Length: 254
Image 1 (cartoon, rainbow, N blue to C red):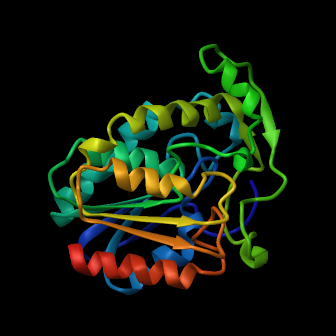
Image 2 (cartoon, rainbow, N blue to C red):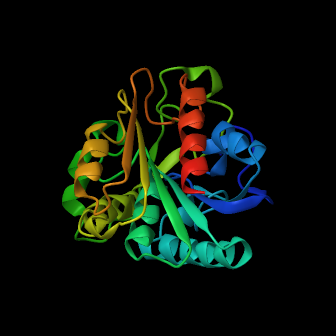
Image 3 (cartoon, rainbow, N blue to C red):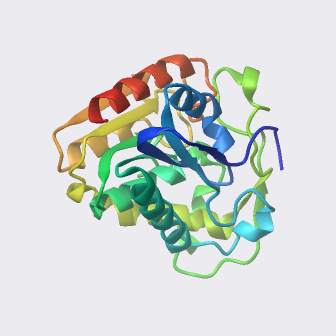
């Protein structure tokens, strides 16, 4: 594990409850400052670990997109029972999970926030692109050590979130496959949607934001692009702007 800080974040508060889904190899701490702002504004928070995360990288190797979906659907059901309405916040891998669930139009869904969305992956994803050729085969237990905790322009806070120090490559292929899977269903997303992306994102190209906006069924779409930020928007230099945009969206849909 790299970094410090919380792995999961929960807070009681008012509706809508924000169900936050973190990124691949990461934890809820990747969204730390942003979720702090949401909680300080009085909203309920549910930011649990996705299966295979927060323990050891070997535990993630055999996790599947369906595992992440099943766990997240359960969190949404429980939050809806408790608070009546939910907003999905998905970051990176979590954006794919959130978009898939939003396409299913669960009861009580008030909105979707897709951050650094992973509809396609870039060269900076940390996984050699040639390995995508193995996507139809079972890959052995291979790992790729990360050069640093996350893709940031301002690296002042790169030790403030907990993440694995390596990519389990078989699980990384699940993220790649999931992008193609979710691209087929985003046209069913009908709830208000906020799309946030860093222009200097090397992991998930910023054009994913435009692609997502064009593909959604809803016309209630806001796109916010951050010129001086990369992939980890929750800790990069424009995080205060990211938080303000999130809170404005929550006030509107809430």
